[in-house]
Length: 324
Image (cartoon, rainbow, N blue to C red; front, side, top):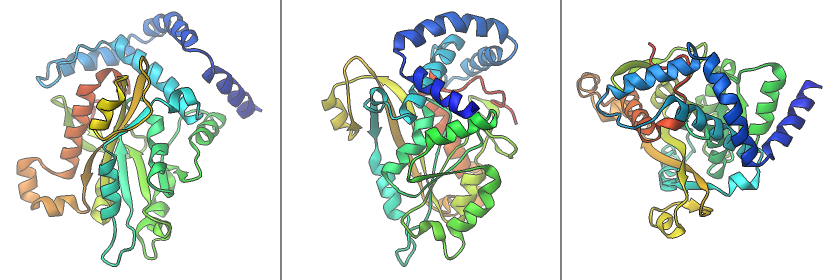
């Protein structure tokens, strides 16, 4: 009964016009802000102040901008998951050659497909990222631990669903890895399996200590590091919004998608491919420690750049940010 109510309410809400959501934000946000001065809002203010002390962070972004960005990106995420054309038509793909090359290279010496990890962060309309991987593989596996009651978790699972995507709870991770890597690797028989995850937030799991904007921070890179050592390549990718540009400019950059003047585009951009056993290939362990070019530190630097470029779209409010 509760699930049916949630589904009905969400379907109605997602189809409401943008002016409705704009008015709702104007009314609700000041109340939220007043109630969370010592919690989520206060954390965001403090994190932004500390980040500005770092010379590499020059963006003029306020806590209000962050919460406005989170709000509208959540609306885009759920409209996109519901496959509403007003949102899916705004999606633009960039640097797809990075993903295509990674899939081409993810094969064993006898031509057997090998798994590939695709990692990102909670930035932009991030809920759209994992289904986007179904463009490149019919064998996508998402590790997620949704919050909320049972009805909420089931609703999110149904929203994220795709015939080419399977969702797993972290408790199922060991079995998933066996199916991906242990001979015979069952999940790779129908093509490259893509293991999808976000690495800037985590629950009930250990992370790696890295540095973001000069501050010690935990990023959940142990699993990407492990699967990379086991033989999987890694592709980093992200999403963010951008004011619409003309189609010619996008074609020159090698992007694909539908562009509409006057509307923000939802950009899904593939960034970097890290080959299997990156640390072993890259250098000796001692040299990696000296140069700071390990897999995890390289990914952490990428993440720092992503946040710097689009600071109002990252979840600065998360309680675990900038903690070790």
